[in-house]
Image (cartoon, rainbow, N blue to C red):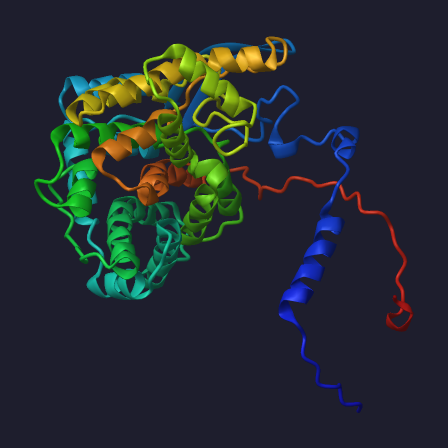
Length: 460
C-alpha cells in the first residue's frame, strides 16, 4: 500500500478555488427560466403568488384578478374569517389587550367567550416559566450574539425535555404548541439579557414572568423591569403582536413550517425551521432596514417639513445615489398589498400617540410625509405603465414604534417570531390534520449540460 505524501494545504486558497467553481457551476442562464415556464420564487409573471395550497387560518388581500389583469384594492388581513381591524378595534374599545384572544382564534377557529378566554390566559400564564437548569445551561452558559439563533437553539433544547417529543397526535401537538407560544417571550427576553451581559458587559437581569399580565405587559416587564414601561407602550406592543400573528400560508416562514411539517417531523424541528426562515433579512429584517434608512434621511435633510427637500432625497435613493446604493426605499411596497397595508394603517394611528408621549412628533411627521410621497415618486420614477402600485407596509412604522418603546433593534425580528409563532403553530396543525395530505415536493428542472466521466489520471 502506497503511503500518501504529507502535504500542507493553504485552506484559504482551496476555499477560494472551490468558491469559484461553485459560482460557475451554479450559474443558470436567465432565459432558461422563461423557456421552461419556471415561476421563480413561486411567483407568477404578474408577481402574484403561485397557488400551492388551501388554508382555513388566514388570508391576505391586496388585489383582485380580473381576467389576466391585477386590480389593486384596499388591503385586508383576515384571521379565521374575521377582519383584523375588527379584532383590534374590539380590544381597544374594551380597553384590554387582544393578542391572547387572537392566539385562541387562530388555533381554534372561533373567538373565545369570556370564561374560555380567562381559562386560556391562566393556562398560558402558568406555562411561561422556564426550568432554572434550562435557563442556565441553554441561554446563559451557551452564549450567542444573535437572539434568533438563541431562540432556535432553545426550541430544539426544549425537545430534550419533552418525553413525548416525537408524538404527532393532535392533542400532543396542541400541547407542544401552547407550551412554545407561552415560552417564546421568556426565551427572547432572557436571551437578550444574556447577550448584553456576555458581549456588552451589562448587568444580567433575569426577571420571572408574571402569570397575571398580558403577553405584551409580561414581555416588557421581563425586558425593562417593573414600572419601567407605560400603559401606551404595552398597548401598542399588544397591537403589533396582533398584526404580526399570521399572514396567510404563503409567507416564507409559514410556508417553511408547512413544508417541514408535511414530512411529519416533530414540532420543535418544524418551529426551528420557521425561525431560521424568519431570521433571513429579506423576510424578518425590513423594519431594521427602515430605521437605518431613516437615520440616514434625518442626517441629510435639514428641514424635515420641506416636501421638496424630502422628495429630492428620495429620488437620490431611487437613483442609487444616496443611502446604501440599493435603489430601495425600505418599508415601501409589498408582495401582496397594493393600495394599502391594513397593518400599517392600524399601527400608524397609535404610533402618533406614542410619538407625542416620547417627544418625537416631528420625526413621526417625517415618516408620514415619506409614506405619502414615496408611492407617487416611485410611479414617476418607474413610469406609470411599468410601476407596480406600492404603499407603506407595516415595517415602515414598526421599527419606529419599537425604538420609541425603547426596544433595541436586536429584538425586532425576535418580536416578530414571538407573535408569528401563533400562526406557525396553527398552520402546522392544519397541515397535519388534512386527511388527504401529501409531503410538499415541487419540481426543479435540471439544465446542467451532459458531460462524460474522465478517469482521474486523465483529468487536467
